[in-house]
Figure 1 (cartoon, helix red, strand yellow):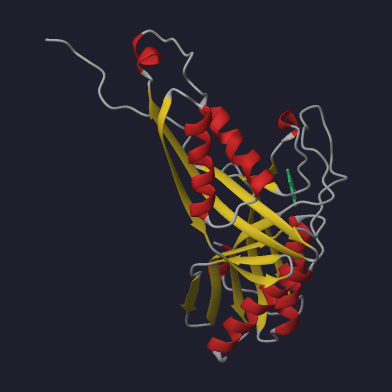
Figure 2 (cartoon, rainbow, N blue to C red):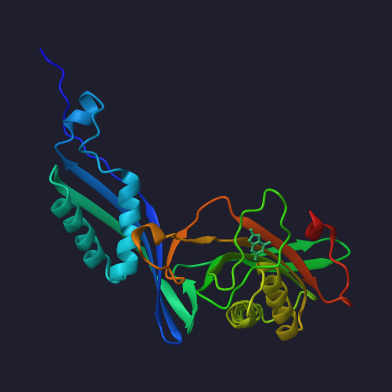
Length: 286
Ligand SMILES: O=c1[nH]c(=O)c2[nH]c(=O)[nH]c2[nH]1
């Protein structure tokens, strides 16, 4: 009886690629989650640790980003075929390359602005006491992205600061907001839609030097457009998109190829208030 190595494969799973295609004033956006798995003559690394036939998974990730720059990223099938054929063609020890891509859809809001497809959640919390009634409406999971018109620089630099200054970056967030009504009587449906349109419009139209600035402009637009509202609270995660350094491959990256970060993320929170509004009931502050 012998104990033998059975079927095996290896690769880089879930490379998060965001590819911005700049076509004049209009920007395209492709959002992929790419997984590569190679199989072939890989016995040596398992049996003796001889890695002479092992293409590092790190290289697979780099290949995804380099190919996205060189060939663009369009239909996921075409991009997957390109990658899979590359690994089989260039690596003699590889018999088979499996490339899986999840593609996330974004709907266009403007020349460089997008909303992630998929429903947000509309929320409400009503509190009735003997003295007062408070109606709070809100939204969560509204994911917005600007491919440009966002900068972040001039910030504090201490001995731990490594963040490069940016004069052109992706700005993306998942809006989590709650707003309180002045009264218990409104056209709730159009009030919600109006608040949503105001938030989205402000995100799209604000040339941003910080997500904090975008937050205030979103809150201000909501209160300006919706006289029935007293106050809005916004929690905006900064969904970071990191520019990939393609210089080791002799490629420029003019804000075209990004790693979509997961965590940690910046979290920017703030309240915007109509200063003559009656104070909220206690629940608002809990
Ligand atoms: O808009 C931003 N605000 C920040 O406070 C911050 N901090 C950071 O690292 N990146 C950003 N971006």
